Every structure is written in structure tokens, then in C-alpha cells.
Length: 131
Image (cartoon, rainbow, N blue to C red; front, side, top):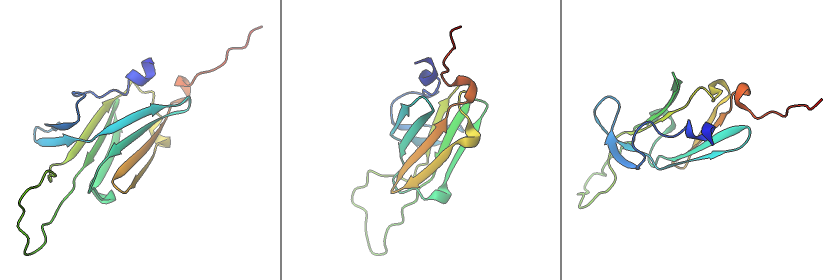
């Protein structure tokens, strides 16, 4: 359980509007973290985000997702109501070095990001031989 806690968000836990790390408004995506003996899995919902508008970094124990979506109103249309916005997505998760970022894999399909974060070898469970 302690290893899983290392991936909890460094900011408030509630999804929705938040301040980005640079002080401008942003949106925390809805996400889920799962764990196996080998890796953590992160699923984040990023509707309207293209692959080239998403960056994922792992530096100094912070896993950071940043994404920008854009919506262009069709010519001749007048927007009467709109809940979605062009505000950027940002999610920052803190970990204690338990992630092997060199082996991480990410896939963005249909607005859903699936990120596999293998555990560092030193953090994987091991059997101890009894002599």
C-alpha cells in the first residue's frame, strides 16, 4: 500500500478546475490508478486532446501530464451553451522513485490515455529463500 500512496496526487484530489503549476487556470482530468506486482496503470480521460498536444514527463519524483485541447466553432454557428472549455489539462502525481520511467508506455486513443508505469526493480516484491 505504501508504494501506491507514492503515486497519489501532489495537488488536491478532486477532479475539475484547478490552478496549474504556472498559476494559470487548468483542468485536472478524471483518472484512475491501478496496481499489479509489476507496474502501476494510469488511465486518464482527455476528451478532445490530440497526441501532439499531450506531454508526459517524469522528473524529480513528479509525473506530469499536460494537454491542450482546442475547439473551433463551425462557421455560421452561435454557441448557446457549452460546458467544455479550451482550458489545458494538467495532472501532477508524486512518487518516490519507484517508477522505471525508461520502460513506461503510453497510448492515447479516443480521448483516453493509458499509461503503464513499470515498477523499478528495487521496488518489486521478492521471495526470500529460507536456508
